[in-house]
Image (cartoon, rainbow, N blue to C red):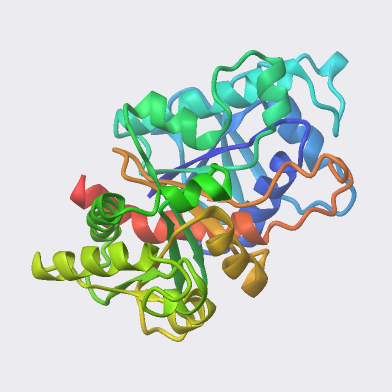
Length: 330
């Protein structure tokens, strides 16, 4: 597989964790192509305690090769190193991070990449650069022509989809509707099929304590129950609502192949409490496959060589694991 890696905001920990992750993956089966600035990557290699990797500059993705500890670099040369500082939000870094993503998407849409794996970007730097998108999901949606991409978290054996994401909790509760549950279960199931996952049952989490106890603690679950019954009648393998205080544990035990979380923090807390470092994000429902770490740029520790690469390793492994099935479905 040929996997594109965007190095994220150059002033954050992205370049560092990309280098460490490539050094930490020993198989050498995949060709990793970093979209970034060679000067930034070489600078990150000089941080204290950094591992040795081989850098190979390429001008065409057909030149990319696979080998343990080798990083192909598609050098976009878009950082003025004389004014660059690690840990500082800057317009040039926000613009560069956006350009890395846009170029990787262009190649992925053309079929020259099997997946894109992203390092973290900085929302403030994007705003400073007047990039008209708030984050990765919005950029990928716009540049791939996808109206409503799906977010899926993965941590070890647990997969979590999100019915709502960046909205106020009060609004999120209003968005738990029969129609939205029907739409999301259908689309999430198709997304799982794209990843080669067609066995097992999806669970829809409950919203209220004890899933409402038949209307004693709210009536949102009534609509969920009706949606689940109708989806089952259509042939979908889905159950719920399952109380949120147990559904994620049960998914970890293998009872469900995925969970549909009803709001942002419901799924985030479950995944990150279980294993913060290994929680990764996949953006699905698009023509291309994107995996990502699920942490920020950590500007406070950038340039010190102490950032953990565990999330990036997990994201690269997921890209490698799912890309063959995704490419076949595409």
